Length: 281
Image 1 (cartoon, one colour):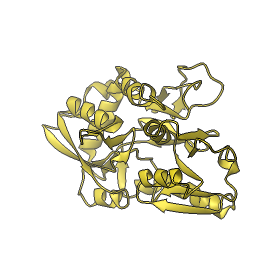
Image 2: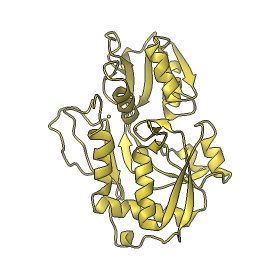
Image 3: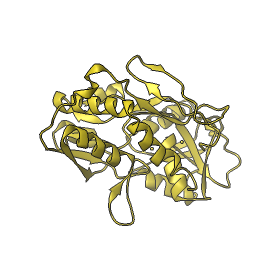
């Protein structure tokens, strides 16, 4: 789901695909993650009424701060809050279903879920089998290392190193490309990022390639044991995946997201999960 001290947070207007800056921190470095807010339109107020429909949401709930199981065994995080607010406005009920990441889009395409919300990167390959809502967050991939690591200072310092990733993610794709280019020694793939991070803490691997916001989530859960190094080295966007052809649900999501952007709700959720609950807090 982002070290954030000294970085600029930007509100992004997606409709024209032009980033409009709104500084929140006095900073020199670019942001690790930023809310991507669909620009409000005249149609934003006309959110389709889903008639109390239950929306089954598939999610890998091991991905803080987007979604994880808290001490009370409840699924919490940015995405559960996001879907709850969307459904409040669209008259639906979001039910999160924990599932493994591997095969999650195939399960959505087959109708096992109505949507997938799990820090999902929008890609052209995934668009072949599922649809996406408008983006709600932009971010970059980063390198996560142990707190006592001094040799690895960023992605360019991974030569000869072993990195961990979660199987089937865009991080996996990036690590595979780096390995083919000879920029790292080996890639070890794990079923969840929690296992990849544990391998790092166990010194089984040298680093983890992970999305910036998720890196901060694991830093927060392992205070004083992990850190990010270097700058984000990709630029990507997240959205809610929807079963292809379910235009009513996609329209409801897009209209609700636009309305939430206009009234500041998206920004408040971003502040709650990515700033107020940032690393070490």
